[in-house]
Structure formats: structure tokens, C-alpha cells
Amino acid sequence: MDIKALTPHLSVSPQILASELQAVADAGFKALICNRPDGEGADQPSFDEIAQAAAALGLQASYLPAETGKVRDEDGKAFGALLHQLPGPVLAYCRTGMRSTTMWALSQSGITPLPQILEAGRKAGFEMQSLVQRIANGGVTPGDQADASHQVVIVGCGAAGIAVASSLLARSPQLDIAIIDPADAHFYQPGWTMVGGGIFKASSTARTMASVIPTDVRWIKAAVAAFEPDKNQIILEGCRVVKYQQLVVCPGLKLDWHGIEGLTETLGRNGVTSNYRYDLAPYTWQLVQQLKKGKAIFTQPPMPIKCAGAPQKAMYLSADHWTRQGVISHIDIDFCNAGAVLFGVADYVPALMEYVKKYRIGLNFSETLVAIDGPAHQATFMKTLADGAKEKVVRDFDMIHVVPPQKAPDFVRVSPLADAAGWVDVDPATLRHKTFANVYGLGDATNTPNAKTAAAARKQAPVVAQNLLTALGSHKGQAAYDGYGSCPLTVERGKIVLAEFTYGGKLAPSFPGWLIDGTKPSALAWYLKERILPPIYWEAMLKGREWMAEPNMVG
Image (tube, rainbow, N blue to C red; front, side, top):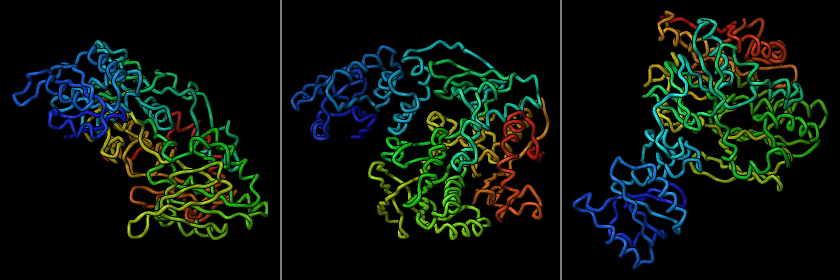
């Protein structure tokens, strides 16, 4: 038998035999649903045969047949009713398990989020992309009418989405663009480190979404449920259909707060904080000010994450405050990093190590935070040893700054646009999708091997704009992205190690060494971070002004 679990309550399998029912009962199943019509195959037992053998073992059996490829809307409703009535766990079967999975998927419309339905099916070995519209439409087959159609559709109103919309309009003001995002607010996320260090106010990093979307762009305020790139359309929640000629995918990434056991229950209290959330960054500063002695832990999860230097930035700014307050000698600081090195580009490590020594920071590599007990003030890490073995390490804390594991959004990971790891699969230079020629990706959700930073998105947006317009035939020439990313590492209040690099960790300084040597702490780099970069973000990047971000033309 090849039994696949869809949920804890339901599993599916290919055709089962009466002789296999004892094993089914021994596996803990309480009921069966047969979705295969009698007589479909010469080697197929009848439902009555299965039902009699099942009854002898105390299993309930129900018959809900459907022909191959002809699962009706009403079959999904009936399947859902059976799941509600029958004792669980339930095993549903047909010839391969596909019809059973299809009925379950339709029955879950409006109950389980569409990406979760698709992902459960995929894990069980069943691709259900052809069902997305029916599932999104309440389990009912929709009509083919599109609700909207645009030349260019952009998914995501973050830094990448707004920047690429503005870069497109700067080149082609009459372009028909729609941008899709359900959020009400837009955030300058690079500023949250400064909020957590007491330099910025949180309110200075937020604006209404309506105020940053270009006036000539149509805002579709909705959540994406699924992509159908073979039909050049997107399915929104509620089964609204948006068609496009060219698609740009930049929804950012998903912070998986639930990926650490106990974290969501204690965030924002018990000394547990994170600068990766707008409402928690002020709590970081509160904790830093209150701590006079004890243990402070700063964590970094496995890569990739947005702004790989941010976990350290929080730590250095906190340690600098404790140094200025004269309490640093009473505070034990630990940096627990799932990776094997302090920073991925070796040229910047010597300067950072000077601050590690100055602040007496304990470096703990290959340690991943897996659980946290806020009331007990204990954090549990899984440490990978040199021989590959793993061991648990429990650390006490008075304050802990947590960075959650991160991944592509669910609706991206289960889509045809994703690579095997779930990221939008694009060419690293052109940012065009490797399979679908009229799809582009930029920002944090792509699989390009660059640092996931706002600086990277600022460089990527003009490249996508140029290449997309060339594809439409309105412009000429191909642009290439070189992997540029910037990470201003705030090592103390008033000084920054300005890390700038391209693909492969090649240094890419924006300024001459006599002005700013990025491998050393710089007061001028701090001035850039504190005074210059925020207005560049709001008034240049988000408005299509490509100062120091013009695309590199290669053809």
C-alpha cells in the first residue's frame, strides 16, 4: 500500500484490496471512502467486497465514486460532508489517489488557505494547479471571464514592487500597470535596526500604502491565491482573475515566526524581541535601556534571510549602549548563528571581530534556535557538530533578540514559478523567469544568490524595467544585474562598516577609499545611513529616480 497523509485526519491511497484491510486497521484508520466506480478495472475488487471485509474489522466504509477527470463540484461537497460524519482518521482511495485528493481539495475551499491545500497535495505527490480557480471559487467551477487585464501586473508593494513600478513609468509614462498587495502600510524596513537602537522613531519608518504607490498605477488591494502562468493570469482570493502581458513577482519573503516553538506566545514580553517586526523594534530599545546586568542573546537563523547583517547590527548597537552606560562588564552577550562564519564576505570580518572582542561577545556558530520558553527565560538551540551530529543546547537569558527563519510566501512556493526550494526561479543577470519568458522577479522572493537587502532591490528595479520594456518592444537593449547588495553594519552609535559587494562576494564600493573605506568603521558611513539613505529611499528609489542605480547595459 502507498498511503499518503493530506491532513492528520485524512490520508489517500491507490486502490486497496480486501487482504490489505487488516494493515489499514492496524495503522489506526477508522473509516474508508471509496472514490473509484465499480468495474473501472479488471483487477479491481467491488466496493461491496471491500465494505464487507472492512465491517468485519470494525471499519466504516462509504462509496462516493467519480469517473477519472470528472470530479464534480457536488462531489467535493459530499466528500466534505463524509469527512465531517465519519470517525477518523479516514483513508480515501481511487485508482491512484488523485480523485480522492481532488475531492478533498474542493471540500476545503473556504476552510483551508489555498496555498496550504496545494502544498499538502504536492507533498502527497499530486499536482493540483489545474484546480486553483475551482478551489478559490468556493469549490465551484467558475466562468472564464477575467476581472481585470493589464499590460504589466506587479505582485507586491514593498520596496521592490514600488521601485520597479516607478522605474517602468519613468521610461514609459503611458504604460498600463497594476500592482497587487493587500497591505495598508508601507515600511522602510532598513530603519528598524535604528529604531531598536534608539536612533529612529518607529513612526518615521512607516507611510500609508496609498501615498507611495505611483498615481498612474492601479492598486488592486487583494491577496494573491495562485499563479497560472500558462494562462497569463493570477488568481486572487475570492477567485478574482487578473490577466497580464508581463508579470513582475516581488512579494518579499515570509517570516516564519511559528518555525520556532513557543516564540509566538512570548514575543513582545518576557524579554523576547525582534527588530524584524515594526511593533517590536521599540521593545528592543526598551529592553536594552532596562538591562543593567545579566545575559543577552542575539540569534541568526539559517540563510537565506533578509539583510544578513541585521542580527549583528542589533547586537552591536545594544552593546554600544551598555558600554556608554558603564554596565557592559555586567552583561554576558552571546551571538548564536546557524551559519559557520560571522559574515559571508571575508573582507569585512576583521573589522567586525574588533567589536566582538571589544564587547566581549561569545560567538556560537552552527547553532539554530528551535524553541523558546519566555516565562522560564530559556532558549533551546540545535547545534550541529563537526561530525554532522546534532545536540541540544539550552541557554538562559534576560533579553533575547530573535530573528525568525524565512522562506518564500506560500503562494509562491506552491506555484509553477518556484524552483525546488520554493523561490521564484529567475536568471541571475536578466531577472527573467527561466521558464516563463513574460515573467520577471526581483527582491527577496527570488533565487538569485545576492544579499536580500533594499539596496539590492534598488539596483534590480531598473534592470527589470529595462528588460521588460524591451520584451514589450517599446525599448531596445538588455540590462544585467551584477548581484550588488549593501549592508551598513552599525558597529557602534556613530560608526558603520559599509559592506558593499556583488555576486561571489566581490567588493563593490560606491565611494573612493579615501572617502569611505567600507572595510573599516566610518563616521561618514553612519551619516549616510542616518541622514542620506532614508530620503533616497522615499524620494528617489520609490519615485523612479535612479541616482547611482542606472542599469548596466550589456546588449
